[in-house]
Image 1 (cartoon, each protein chain N blue to C red):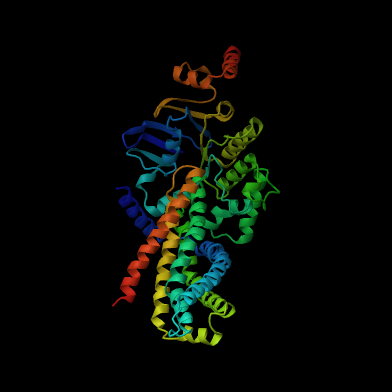
Image 2: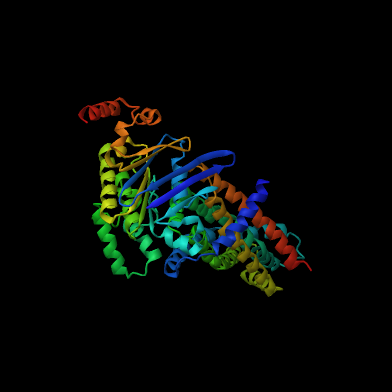
Length: 246
Length: 254
């Protein structure tokens, strides 16, 4: 029953988020601040993880391709496919659920605990539009982060492959270009946009409707991470089923 | 002026406010007092429109809030200033930005006009040099004064304060009380203060509403509270020896 109630409350929150919009000159600054906090502030960790995980994917693939009949270029091909189809959109989104999601939940939750949300309501401001909509807008730039993760993952794989002596640079680049299907990029970005919406709204929901004090803010952050990850994994499955299997 | 008629509010089976009827007058500091759990905060949140209620009405200068359209409710809320118990300052903004916030949201003033108004109200609450501080860098008393400045910056007709003295030392508490009373008198606004600080009751209680278990048990002023023989009130107000002695001295002199 609680689950059903929460699902209903979540969808009501989403409709409320688009109602009674905040003045544009105020909203513009909120969106820019959230772009700085959520997008620019995540670039470093995403770049670091993407580069090194790209390297690990390459090493693991190369170490498992022991049959001499399999061309060395397959390492680049497998790395590209892994990174574009799954690692960049899904794995990075799970990481972002931890980094960005817990930031959103704790910042909105703290506002709830310290009556800042009540202060907005008393002033007649639609607090959901004021707090959640800018995060939704900022995260519409999330594909930019994922593009960087794709690029750096492939570059990391290349570095690991060449410097680790698993294959030549030529073989790797040949593999990266092998059988390229442009729809895979579209598929990855469709997932990315859906995950961006989830990353903006589920942590906001857990922060906005939390009750209690500082301890509950911590608990809400953890719960929000769990549910954001679960929903991302489930949607990943359904989107993959819908978009790739035919 | 705020007219409350037969206000009833429940949470599930718990009947919190039981038919409260009272009037909060313009240009006066109106106090709601009572023990913890007596329904003061629920009453204040009903007055602010944060809680819906089952029965009764709340009229702001003749306009019944629950019957207003959404736009009118929003306009009405723009005329309300609120000082929260914990100040509720936006911690991502400086003190000046906090005070400017209602102006940015509800007016079409230019930046220089807004800056002038912010300077004026910050001077009014004796915070001339705190513009660029963050709320976390300000003391409890300063935060309360900033909250008052934010509440009055947009010329409200109604000012609500929830426990404005909680967590403050006695001297700062008196400064805050006096500031609220001066502002109420100066701008002729309707001020409603939720408190259980007896010093505030004695200092600024021009109209006092006493709640007990969700019922209005008594109403009067700081003068009549000394003379009342209502046991519920005297048990609460004169529970400390100090106030008992103050009352005895007052009754002796009058």
